[in-house]
Length: 342
Image (tube, rainbow, N blue to C red; front, side, top):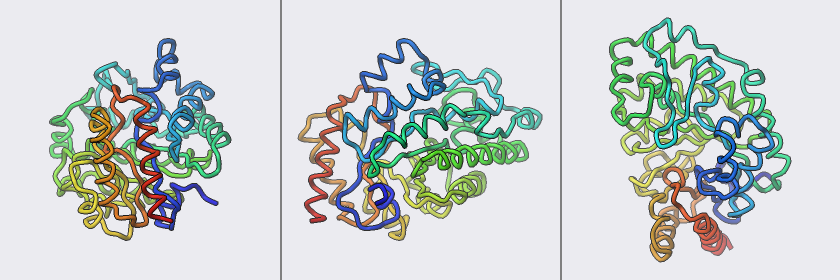
């Protein structure tokens, strides 16, 4: 039998709603925190056994229905020849941002076996260790989100330099997106070949764009990645309530919803011919259990037991989250939805 999450992503009948959490691997977990006293994030990724251990820790601790490979969305960019530093409290920082066509043309489109063999080995190790009913989620960054880091040089909420590039230098923009989308497609295909069951496209900051700009400057490249895979796909962004129809048109067997749109409304807008993932506000997990329980029940009522719902947060687990709460949420969702399925 295929993993529960895979069956849900295909909108097949399931015995309970599958649960996993974005950023469940790392951050809050005691084993990972100990590792980070000795190794940087990229160093953990380059050691397949350590990477596999971090990926598996939340599955064992929380009983979730999927492992998500521990990595960073900037990891495949290193193989393109970009020097990225992950700065604590800031995020990815690039000393020499992309500014010109020459900058773009210096970027390689690497073979994953050459650029990230350690991640592919970690995928194999995790898939071998996981029970058959648990899925392995691989992922890549969305082309807009990664392009924004490369152009801005560091995280931003305004994306002024990025939008200037789109509007004033469209040749630079489109060639950059071509190279990123091809690199990412190769990357996630290699993860599938190594054992990933599902692929998620994390275009976390694409909500900064209007629907018109999204469709012109981003959608074709996301579609290229999502349409080039043989396993179920999840298409995710935050602040994307105005983009849901456009994102659905670009692809994804499952559309990730953040907490800003009620799940039932979001599902209606993307169409019930596909699944949805979400959409508990991660900050709710910092509150009292009574509120957590009520919020989980609200999400499940909105899903109404329909085929295709994957329970998750509306974005990643916050660093201050008590890991025990994640296990209680998983247990609650399983209890509530198993009773409905029965």
